[in-house]
Image (cartoon, rainbow, N blue to C red; front, side, top):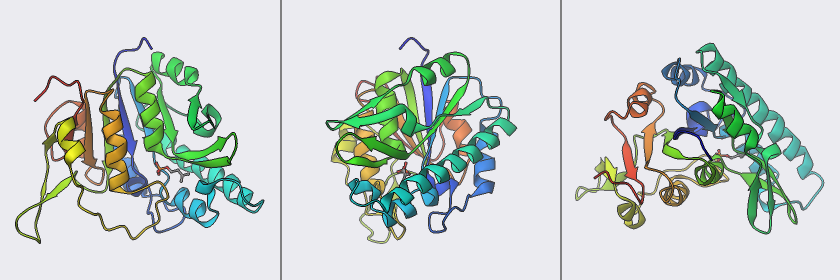
Length: 268
Ligand code: IP8
């Protein structure tokens, strides 16, 4: 598409919600993140995760495995309703901070057939070109044969980078970045910069995962990131619980985080 390079921010479900408490928004965090985007006037897409607005009901009704029983439809409609209210929280907060944000329903823009997800991104593209910041989210996804599944925010980003010219994808998570083990068994070290090749070899330290996440934890994220690196200049993993760091990254300044350079990046 013909649009100047855009940045994508993924606000992780653990940053914007309390993942162990159904429908609990981490409002203070959300406000701090939105403040960092105040008056931001470069092309930007925000994708937010589901956290406790999606994963708990998705797990309860086995949405991920497709249509088996009519009872699952209660889950599908509930997730859609809950995700819509979470998107509304994000959009309202951004608008209060002078970001021209508009929510787009992912499940109305995407459809899956023969293991391929088909998107209709024209409205998103037009919004961007007018200076609007599109807000998307992980969502339910209708599937030709299986009926439905769950579509993560990370998978959506994977498609966006193929259709738009994307400079960087910034993941706001609840950790400072990727860590590697050190000789001292009890210590671990934040990796500040990795090349694409380094990431392929990288063995993520197993993260403690005591909350439900039907679309995978940090290991799953590393797999998704390695796909993105074919298309973007860089991917940054950042701690969304320290929102001020976000503005540094948007301004291409150095701050505590992990940067993974794209396959074709000329940076070292
Ligand atoms: O939180 C999952 O999206 P994610 C979407 O980005 C639902 O993995 C509805 C569980």
